[in-house]
Amino acid sequence: MNNVNSLFSIQVVFYLIGSIVMAIAWMSTRDTSNPKRYTTGLFWFLFGIGFLFGDLMIATLGKPLSYKILGVIVMLLALIAGGNLLGGGQHQPKGIWDKAALADKLKNKLFLPAIAIPVITVILTLGGKNLQIGDVFLLDQKNLTLACLTVACLLSIVYAYKITGGTPIVAVQESRRLFDAIGWALILPMMLAMLGGVFVAAKTGQSIQTLVTMLVDPSSKLVLVVIYCVGMAMFTMIMGNAFAAFPVMAAGIALPFLIVQHHADPAPLVAIGMLSGYCGTLMTPMAANFNIIPAVLLELNDKYLVIKYQVPTALAVLACNIVLMYFLI
Image (tube, rainbow, N blue to C red; front, side):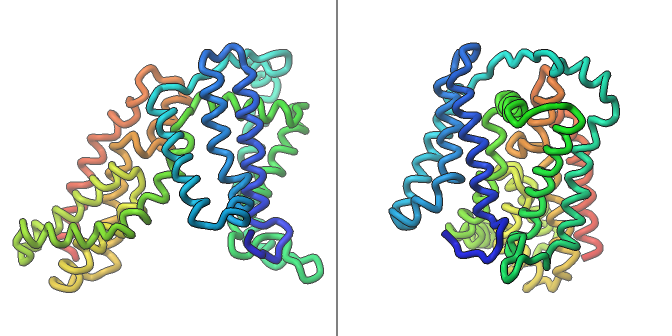
């Protein structure tokens, strides 16, 4: 475990997440209305292992073996999700938790706990950095924003209990309902966040640079600009995250060709390049938190409907980015 001189450290955040995921795994296994309850419970159990037991595994088994075990867990998660082995229960509301009755009773008060989360996070981030008890900081100094967000979520849950009359058990049950509704897409952002590091470690950027040198005339600025912008969009579609695509395309095209060879201004170049990546975000199911989860929560019949409506806008913005980059940078 990392030695962090704070009461609310990043480890505490991980343990909280792991505990909730494990509780959901247990509930999923016991839900007889879910025809795939055992594989669903196994999926969330495997997902919670890293949060709850990651530090213990590293302390007892060492990093190399722990990383291999977690790698096997990731592959098992992919097999369960890819095999369509995740299911959901019926989640019938009871009593006060009849959604229509509760919404009619609380009206706009329902939004207050959600609004409280960003407000409290900002207040704690700006004013809580130096809060101490003796020599111990209250919040993790190396992961301040995440610690503040977690505290804000906990306070918001307490506030939600107050206005709804709910209990912690109900909160976990509602969390499981969302887990079942979203499914495997819930863990996709976290998995994709690591993909950029994998591509960098594999020196994919250098491979792209070599490939461009072989197939394209490096003196053609227009071709390089098109490849860079379209490449950012395409890699983002593959990775689901423009930040993961950025180091690959920057190392492969932006830096060696556009900046070094053609003396492009780096700041606007990479800014428009990132915007080109966001165009890819609009067109891919891999960006599940933007495109798939909203469709699920809105209960749309076509889970790709959000993407279909965004594609024309994404292509138009991408074309504008190419024009701006070529003529202004």
